[in-house]
Structures are given as structure tokens and as C-alpha cells.
Figure 1: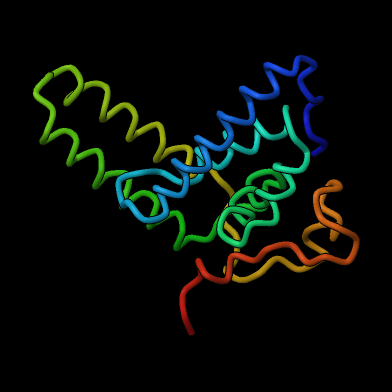
Figure 2: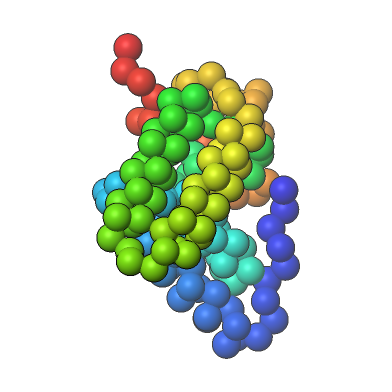
Length: 163
């Protein structure tokens, strides 16, 4: 999937770069904070970098932590069942915690359940794939020009069950 064309204005490119790094930071928080999502922020960061800086987009794709999320999303390779289960558990843990803490009934009984149901449905609709690293046959080695020829894509081996 080729990147979208770069934004023409220097100001808009700069704003996309700043937004991209804000989203990377939020995604990094999501790695360590159980109630913060990671994937959506990384996808948003990649979109911002695709419109502003091929260098930063390449950096994000090559990142050991975030690269697998992006590659799996962009190639529609899917996610493991373990990842789906963990995602849904943390989603509902965060939503239930938020519902307990918020006093607005329409947020507690309207917005939060609607978000939970929508995101759960989306996660379950994503293709389920077997755990383990993607092989070069599953993903072109020069992933749409974002990896150097012969460079292996980052793996999601850190996200698979041990054993």
C-alpha cells in the first residue's frame, strides 16, 4: 500500500510531524499503561508521517515495538487470537473503570458501552492469524519501499505466547 502523497505546505508537513510524534508518545504510553490503547495511536502516527516525512514513516515501520502493529494492519495480515483476547480484556477493564469513575449517566450507560461494543466488534472482525513471525512469503521484503532490500521486517515474537 503506497503512502499518501506528502502534504505540499511546509507548515502542514511540520504540523503532521508534530502530531505524528504526539501519537507515537501516546502509543508508547499505551504499551505501559493498561487502559491506554497502543495500536490506534501508532496507526495515526504512521498516517501523519506518511503525509509529511518518509524518513519518520520508515523509522516507525522499522521500530521493533510498533512496526509489527503497522505491518499487520497495513497488509491486513491479521492479529493473533491471544492479541485479540488481551485487547478486549484491557478495553473492557478500562471502560468499566471509567464507568465507575464518571458520574454522567449518559456517558456511563451510553457512550462507554457503545465504544466498547464497537471496538470489540472491530477487533473480532480482524482476521485471526497464527502466532509467530511473518515469513518473507507473507510480506514483501521491501515492504512498499519502507524496508531496504533484503532487510527483514520487524517480528511480533515479543507478543506471542512463550513455548
